[in-house]
Length: 230
Image 1 (cartoon, rainbow, N blue to C red):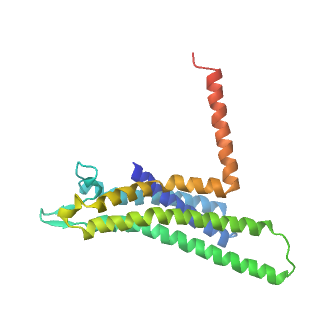
Image 2: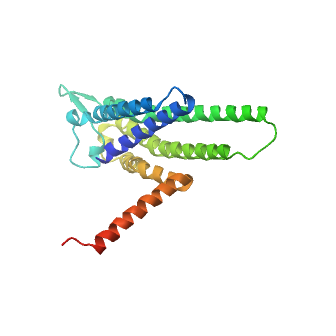
């Protein structure tokens, strides 16, 4: 369940990035109807991707020892062991979204710089621009989110590939690489709340909405204490 929530978080971040990119680059053609349609398609694809990522649970067996059960193998006709399926499922599920998000943010950064240069050419006199400051804060937030994603997912991908392909069967059960894999796995599962911390510290609107949610929860708790159920 923890792995599924982590992959769902990755998928939602990617879908949100694509949606924001379309809104910024195609503000007139990307209407509200297309936004809703894109959201529905993203939800369907999300569950399809999750199903493909974890369908291996039906054919891949895990050892009872949870440390040894982190890696998995497929037995074909009782003789051949195929481990590349694990990487085939893992690399697209993590690597492709990360490359897509980085490409989107780089493209938005280039477009923003071109737009700012065009404005300066049309109006050489320097004037305070709140939109430019907001854009810079947005770029910093995007960069921080992408960095958290990379720092949590890349070590996990590298350690999985190392354990699955480099270590032999005799070394895998007692190798320190398995401990490193366990640590990287927990770090990867933490990227969701790391994103929340990034938004709290770097996005004022997010902080305001978070305060509203906390105030609403506090009011509900106070009402329950003042009017306990009989």
